[in-house]
Image (cartoon, rainbow, N blue to C red; front, side, top):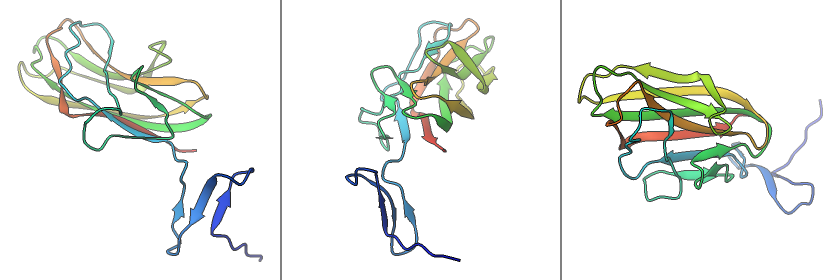
Length: 174
């Protein structure tokens, strides 16, 4: 069996470090694709229809990041920089919701063209109570495809998504 000893692997041009193995044997991938987007204020969609939640990474929220620049703050969505499998998750802390209306949290592809069935949650919270909704899924994406997080209700337009415990995040698997 042959062995190959390297500390770093660079791009074809040699100018960008692609991989590194540190002295502890850990693999470091400097060009990773991952993000954590959050709200900085409570969000009231003011409608019961499917509405994009304005998550962002260019705000003052704690622990936000955007490795690989895949999350587009101007559109509040993730845009796949390369083809591959991605994992996404979101959490919405719903407040002041009517007990006679359901609430949906979902992922949609390509600016609401397709709802991702695996990234979907529906619930009927108690009136004026708080409830967290969580969704997650794997999505095969082609470079340029977008994915966002949306909220919807069956008729309640007065509910809020609390900023402090709500987020949208994801990363490239391979």
